Length: 237
Length: 237
Figure 1: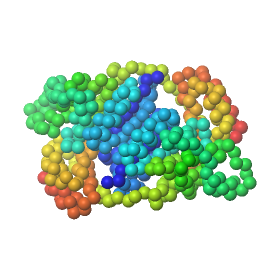
Figure 2: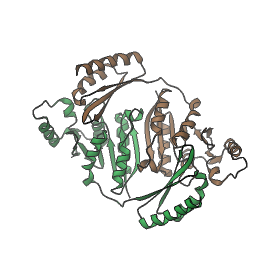
Figure 3: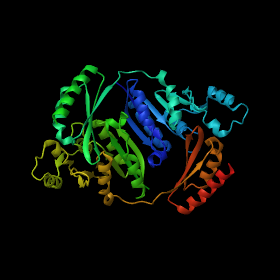
Figure 4: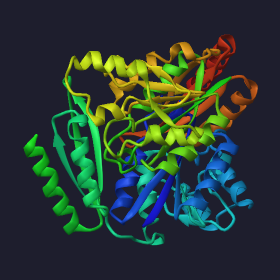
C-alpha cells in the first residue's frame, strides 16, 4: 500500500479563521491513484514546527505534501524551512525566473516576486498553471500553495512523479439506528472479511441517531460479499 | 502563553469522506479562554498512530484534546489506545454505569453500551449532556466524541479544568491587490510591532487576487496602532 501524508502550514487554519479545503481534495485525488492519505499535521508558520513535521513524515511515508506559506510576504517561510529540513540552501530557479520575466514583459521584477522563485537546492520545479510562481518537489516532499485553486493546478504537475497503487473501492450504507444496537453484528462481519475495512460513522440528524457503514477494499468481489451481509443486517433491524 | 493541541482520530476524515468541523469550533472556544491551538494531527483508527500522536503532544503542549473513536463499534479504539499511551488498564466507571442504568430504566445493558463506560485508570469523567456515554480527562489529555454536537457538550464540562490565559485580540482588513505589491511595506509594519502577529492570507475571488491582513495581539493598544498603519497602507494602494 502506498501511503502519503500532508502538512498544512498556516496560523489561519489553527486559529479557526480559515477552513482548510485542501485535505479533502488531495485525499480524493490521491485515492484515484491508489495512494492512501494516512496522516495530516497542521502546524503554525513557525520554522521549527515545519521542519519537525516534514522530517518526521518524510521518513514515515512514501510521500509528503505540504500546502501554504510559499507566497511573497514575511510570514511565508515554508521554502526556507523545507531547505533547512534537508540541510540545503535555497536558490533562484533559472526556469522559474525566465517564465516570470516573460510574464512581466518589462515590468519590474520586485523583491517579493523574486522571493517566490527561490526553491531549495536539489528541488525540481512544478509548473503552476494558475500563477507564475512554481511549486516544487524535493526528494519525496511536494510543496504546494495554500490557495485551493492554485494548489489544485500544481498537483496536476506532480502526477508523473507518483507511483500508482491498487485502487481502494468503497461502498456506503446508511442505517437509521444507534450504533450500540448493531455493534456486535458488525464486529462479526468485520471478522469474516479481514480484507475489507468496515467503518461505522455515527451521526445525529434531527435528533435521531444513525450511522453510515463504510466498506473499503482493493478486492471488489470480497467488497460485494461483505456489502451483501451488511444489507441483510440493515434489513433485519 | 497557554498552548493546546488536537488529535482528530478517524479514517473517515483522512479518506475525505467526512469534513472535520471540530477544529474550528475548538479553536474559537479555546481562544476565548486565552488558550492557543498550536498543532493538530489527524490520524487513522490505528492503535500505534493514536498512541504516538498523544504521547508526542502531551509532552509538547499544556493540553491535548482528542475527538473521535469512543463509540460502541469495533473500530472505536481510542480509549484502549489512550490507556496504552499512559501504560494503564481501562475500567468501567461507577458513576457512568449508574447514570446509564438510570437512563435505561430496566432495559438491557448490552456489551456495546458497556464498552462506552470504560475509561482509563486515573481518568476523570466528563459528563456528556447529549448522551449517557461520557468523555474523560486523564492528566492533560481530554478525550471527546467525534460527532460535533456531542463533542461541544462534553467540552463545556472541561471548562473548569483549564487554566485561562491572556486573550488574543484580532483585527482583519481586506486588501484587493496581489500580495507582491505590498509585501515589503507589510514587513516594515511587522518589524515595528513585534508584539503583534501580522499575517497575510491571500485569496482569489472571481479571478481577482487579494489578501486578508490579520493582526493578532494580547496588547490592545499596540494592536490599534498597528491597525492604523495597515489602514494607511491600504489607502495608499
